[in-house]
Amino acid sequence: MITLRGLTKRYGETVAVDGLTCDIKAGRVTGFLGPNGAGKSTTMRMILGLDHPTRGRALIAGLPYASLRRPLRAVGAMLDARAVHPARSGRTHLVAQARANGIPVRRVDEVLEAVGLAKAARRPAGTYSLGMSGRLGVAGALLGDPPVLVLDEPVNGLDPDGVRWIRRLVRNQAAEGRTVFLSSHLMSEMQLTADHLVVIGRGRLLSDTSMAEFLAAASPASARAVVPDPGERATLVRRLMAAEGVSVGTTESGELTVEGRTAAEIGDLAHHCRVRLHRLSDVRVSLEEAYMDLTARSVEYATGGSGSTAGTPGATVAQHQGEAP
Image (tube, rainbow, N blue to C red; front, top):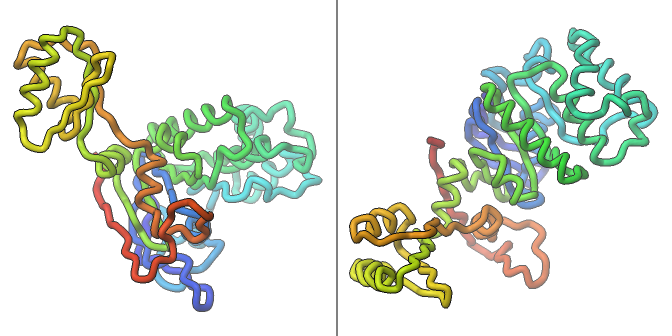
C-alpha cells in the first residue's frame, strides 16, 4: 500500500502539492487524474524519493522509499519512458538494474519476453520508438516482481494492441493483490482499467472514490428502456409519471428515456406491471465528462473557448470522497 499524509511540496511561492492525504490500496488499480500542472508528477516523484516533501509523508508499505533495502523488489516504477542511455541496449539497461538490486539476470529475459521486446533486446535504446520505450519502462518496473507498481502515462505511444496489453497487465497485477497506481490522460482507457480514482487539481485532493461512485455522483439517475408493446409502454409511462421527480420521453422507435429512476427501479416496476422489456440500461456520463466537470475550476492552462472557469477569483473546488466497495 502507498500512504500519503499531508503531502506538500513548495517551490518558492508555488505550491505544487498541497496537503495531499490518501491511501493507494492493494488489490485494485487506482487511477491518478488531474489537469496539467495539477501536481501528479510531483506526487509520484515524492513517492519514489526523487523529490523531498516540504511537509508530510509518502510511504510504501509503511516506509519512505529511501529506507527500502532493495527498492526494485518493493516498488516498480516508470515515470519517464525515455530515461535510458540511448547507446545502451534495452537488455544492458535492465541487467544493470537487476545487478544493483540483487535480482537474477535470468529475470531480465523473462520480463523482456513478457513485454514483447525479446527480439529488440540488443538494439540501442535510442533507436526505440516511444511505444517500445514504454514497454522497456514497464519491463523495468516488473523486474523485481514488486508488490507495488507506479506507472506514469504507460500507454503513451502504444498501438491499440499495446494499450489492451497494458490494461490486461495492470488488472492482472491488481488481481494478484498488488498495489497499482496509474496516471493517464486517456479517459476512455482509464474508465476501462481503473477500479478507484484519485483526482487532484492545483495540488489539492478533489476526489478519492471508486470509479462507480465517481460516475454515479456526476449524473442523476437516468435510464433507457425499450417496451415493444404500445399498450404496455403507455402503462409503464403512466406509472412512472405518477411518481414525483420523474420525467419520461419517448423516441420514434418507442424507446423510453427516463430521468429520475435507475434501470433497476424501472425493471422492478415493469415486473410489477407485467410489462415486457426488450432492453433496459442505465445512462451514465462518461469518465471524461465527469472529470471535466469536477476539474473545471482547477485547469492551470485553459484554452480559449474551452468553457473553463480556471482562474476565477474565489472559486471553490467540489469535494467528493468515498470508499471503494
